[in-house]
Image (cartoon, rainbow, N blue to C red; front, side, top):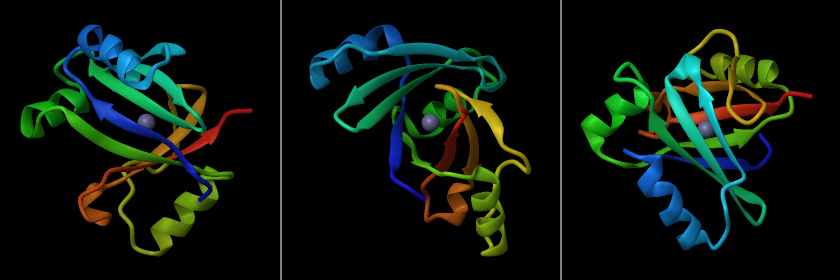
Length: 133
Ligand code: ZN
């Protein structure tokens, strides 16, 4: 894996959290994007080389809605940039990690993504993401 691509934070409302993070980070978000397949709306911030992704559920079916109900708002996942997501998925599977999907999905911000189950990573949901070229 390369670097941490972004940190995902589950929030109840982008209307509240977006402006607060703009003030906190001292910069405007550069993108708001709905990922309909995941039932989430995302808002991205660039902080130096790093990104923060705020995630709001767009329906009660969303994993973000379930997460907030169970654990409240907060850090939801850590995403790592990978050069070749298929190779990384095969490597992790081989090493015994439980992946949430068999094939990469189209995620927000022009990425192919795959999640590693938090039970496989000591309670942390890991996202692999590869830039779509
Ligand atoms: Zn993410």
